[in-house]
Each structure stands twice: as structure tokens, then as C-alpha cells.
Length: 206
Image (cartoon, rainbow, N blue to C red; front, top):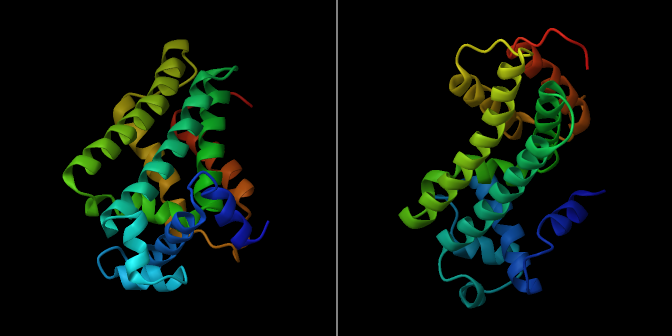
């Protein structure tokens, strides 16, 4: 699937078409220039619209960022919750959580960079809401690790600290991943799943 098709699929739930074009344009602009250096004129121009047309759909630039951040964080949370609630041992569920979380950050690295690294630009109310979603993501991974500690599969003296390390490792993929690199998103996901199992002291075999 090409980059344009991936972007269209990613924001398929955003309607009408003009609003979706503005979101995809904002993602590209924020990723390239950063939120604060991007103007509404930049975004409208990329979407092939006038600045005035932007305000029909989004009252402010921050509202656009909130839309992007909310969609991205809910997708990430859904990935982690499915792994937490899935079948299998704690090791299998943790590997699946990391594998799919990393793959999403690689496949959608442009969006993920904006979602994960522009959080501080949100207004207070929106910031608090998104931080709540991040806490839920943390809780989903922490629950899997706690299960592994309880069964004796994992050796983790500091569950909270290890959870933070696991999530940070996965999220950082969005910062460096390139579609022109040697590894595919799936290969990076497999690599990181193995690394995380070693981090938690899992001695068995998948």
C-alpha cells in the first residue's frame, strides 16, 4: 500500500472529505516543521484550500492537533488493550503488545511522531484528556507485566519503571523509522518483542 493510500485509510473515519484533507495536511506539516512553526496557511495550502476554509472545520490549529492526537492515542490504546485481554501466556501477550504497537509506530511513523511528541502544544483541557489515554496505555502494559511476575515468568523488580522503559522503547520507533530502511515494520516489531522479553527476564521460548 502506497503512502497516499495509507494516509487515506488512517483517517477514513474523519468526515467530510475536506476535514480529512486538512488533518492529513496538518500531520505532514507538523511532522516536518513542528507544531509551533506551522501556520494555518501552511496547512490550508497543503490541503489545496484557502485559510478561511480551514476555519469552517477547525476553529484553531490546536483543535487540529487535538483531533490527530486523540485518534492516534485511541488507536494505540486499542492495540495494547487487545493484547492485554488476549489469550496466551503473559510472555505471548507482552510480545504481541510490543509487536503490534511497534509495527503501528513504524507503519504510521509520520503521524506517530506528531501524536507522541507534540503533546505539550495542546491546551490544558485537551492535554489532560490525552494524558488520561496515555495512563490507560501504561496500565494495559503494566497489567501484562504484573501477570508475568505473578506467574513467575518474568523477573521484574520495578514493574512501573520497566513499563515506562518498554513504552518508551516502542514509541521511539516513530522518531527514527524510515520506509527506505533495511527493516520492514513487521521485522522491527519482531525484533523489539524479543528485546522486551529479555528486558523482563523471560527465560522461556515463544
